[in-house]
Image (cartoon, rainbow, N blue to C red):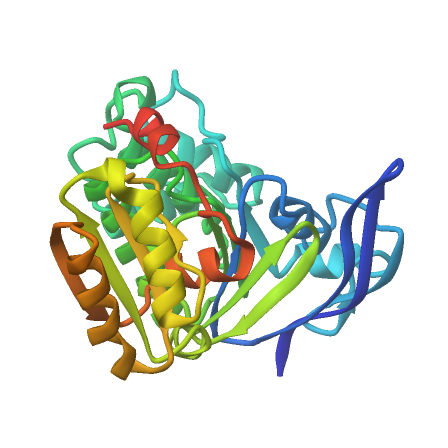
Length: 322
């Protein structure tokens, strides 16, 4: 059974077309990742699927229920963790979860029991009695996700759940997500972190400018860009333009310019040409510190499909918090 079925979905804000005829199916029990840069339409899609936003045309069903005509039935089966924490800073972690449980109809005793279960399940025992304003970014995010599953949903939407977190906190959240999926929850994850999708997802859809540009498992998407990726690191970044021209000429494919000015990459369909490329660079007096052939990453898949990286690394580093 499909948890989500989307047919020819279109959404515009005035003259701006945000979603342009999206067709999508997500199997029940799967962990599905929706990728794309800022402004691609990911959050708009999630808001539509969770009944928070109307659309212009098309059909959207969640567990067979139409998100417009049967919105109440959809809401009973889904939960959403947005990009920003929705917990109360002045309450403790335990108090936040008790409050959510009470609002959802639990008795006082049931609410305390459920809150204690979630505090333990999310590794917040030591922090449970502290005010949330003293939590780290990773702890706040775990609490936020815990609050969305007080009543265990059949389908959980995680809209960029690790945005702004340091790598250690991000991996902690990954373990939480894996546990939810293992317990039978269908998870739809939106993210700008391709490593995250590679680690977690059964299937990935890449959306750009409101259109699906790729759909498949992580392995299928990597295989779609060629048999391998040549990575070249220059000893002198100032020789980048000359190196790019040589790589493009000898391999017959356009070299990709990385954010690091000393790096180049290119898709390889004919490994026999690598010797010609290496020889031509040497003859041109371009010293290298790396000349290697490896499997493509999802970052390189996205770069190949769109011509740009999914996220600005400098911005990401500035956003990282403990």
